[in-house]
Image 1 (cartoon, rainbow, N blue to C red):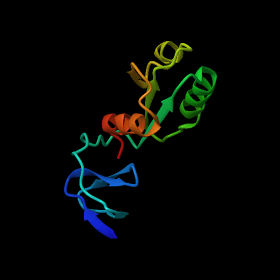
Image 2: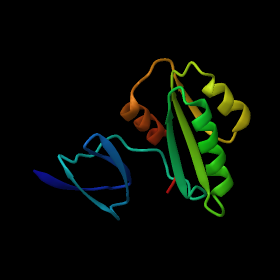
Image 3: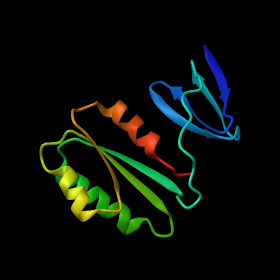
Image 4: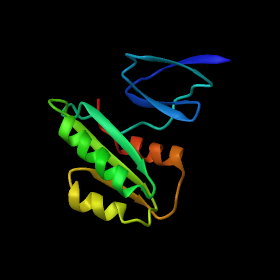
Length: 127
């Protein structure tokens, strides 16, 4: 069974474990068992795109990914949110030192990919 959910304000819609942001009912989500979830944070008109990166012990790949994002953003105003799932390779320290403009969320244990993405989404402000 599919159901459409219209957003009023900023709401999230659960869709097969993912979350989709809807703004002021402008977009309709057609999802199996879609239901409004908790309101998301306010959108920031100065942020075009929120990029959420979930990391677990991939120091070098994370460094390359962040460098590429910032080097190639151009005129797109990005907000980068790194959610670290209890890495033991120094990834959080590298992000703090080399990419202080990135928002870093550090979990004390590995929360899993989906939960970490949801943490990042809750912190996102992109439009």
